[in-house]
Every structure is written in structure tokens, then in C-alpha cells.
Image 1: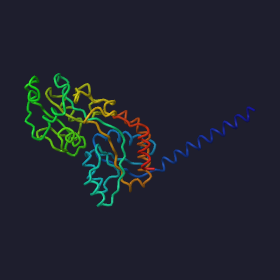
Image 2: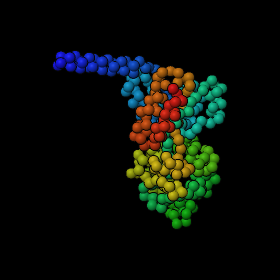
Image 3: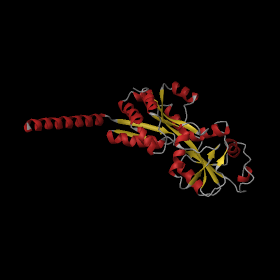
Image 4: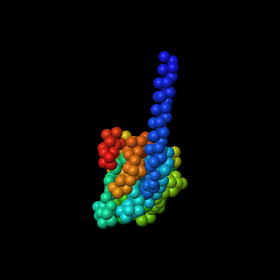
Length: 301
């Protein structure tokens, strides 16, 4: 009996090793390069997914750039990249350019995000603002120079403003939601595609204000205060349930259908929608429900 049991265990071990070997061979069989660019907001998720995917598929090279949503689409619609990270829906003009170049795409939602309006840690007055007050500050024809121009009881100190550059989906979404028209904004604010520059700017000036993705605020909440908008603070719960209005939004990747025909791209997108959910949480964004991930996964099967 002992001999029979030993043989059974040995066979099980051999079969297990064979399966592991086959699995290893399967992952090694994927090769090629996946080119990704686009939103600085979606970047941390895609970069984390790319790093984990490469651990299992060492033959695949993945480059992830940060040109902003619009900047990424400029490359995507002419076939320079396979995937565009996007913090907004594709525009009709971008679809038209892609079509003219024979490029078809699949929109895949990957997470939720909120845009945080932030002030310096020493700012103890601007705790809750209305959309109208934010528009007073940020709109193209704004006459606001001092905090006291917004509310008389606030300090008569100049507001130093920081925000993303014009190619950023965060910039476009904020200006549309707050100012009523995309890309309409006052000219005298400090713009950068690097959210860390914005964090440092606001953290270094008591009278500064800025805006960027909620994930960056959560990473730097020890340096900054977040402003409630219409009485609602941006949190995972308020973004996911839609009560943080109007500054919460879905996040996407846009995948070239032609690129999806390549096994390394298809497997990467599958990996993104299955194992990526935990990574979304890790980098400070808000994952979707399992049923929504399955719905997105069905688009590329």
C-alpha cells in the first residue's frame, strides 16, 4: 500500500511539474512590444499593470508614456501607439481622424476617479466651496485676484493657481465641469503635465490652490488640504456613488482593434481587466464592480 501511495504521489508531482512547465512555456511564448501613451491620471494604473504583466510575460516589452489624454490620442489616431490611456471619452474629431487613417478602436473602462481641488495645509478658510465660487476663480474672464474677492471674510491675499496642462484630460474635464466649456480657463495659472509639480507648488504657498486627480491628493494628503465641493468631500464612496458632483469621472483605455489581433496585446488587456482590479486600489483609484469588469472583458474576447 505504501509503495502504491508513493507511486501515486510521484505521478502527481510529475504531472504538477509538467503543468507548471507548460504554463511557463505559454507565458514565455508571448513576445513583442506594446506601446502605450496618454493620460497622466490613468498612467499609474497602466504602469502597475504593465509591471505585473511583464513578471509573467518577460518576452513582452511595454512602454508607457505620459502625453495627456489629448496628446496620446494624437499619436493613437495615426497608429503610433497601440493603447491610449484616457481620462475622458474619445471626441468625434479624434474618431474621424482615426477612421481616416484606417484605425478602429475599442473603448474599455478600467476605473473611476475624482478630481480633487486642493489648497495649502495652512489654509483654514477655504474648506467648502460651491461650483459657482470655483468658476469665479478659474474661468477665462475671472476678475478674482485675492481670496477676499471670493468671500469678503477671506484673506486679502493673492491666490496662486496650479493645474494640469492643456493636453491633460483632467484639465479638460475640470474646465468643462466648472467653467462650462472645455479648455476655457484664465491664462495666469501655472500649468504642468507633472502632477508632482502641482503638489509641490500648492504645498509651498499658503495662499495657493490647485486641482488634479484624487489619487495624487491621497498620496499627498499630509501636505495638502482638500476642498469640499457643494458640501461633498471627494472620497472613494462619493466618487463611486456619484454624489461628488461634478468632479468625478470614469477612466478608460482605448485599444486599437488591429493591435488587439496581436496575442500580447489581447492578453495584456485581459490581464488589465482581471488582475488589474487590485492594482487600481493600490495606486489610489476606485475599482469598478466585478460585473462591470466582466462586461468590459466581453468586448475583447
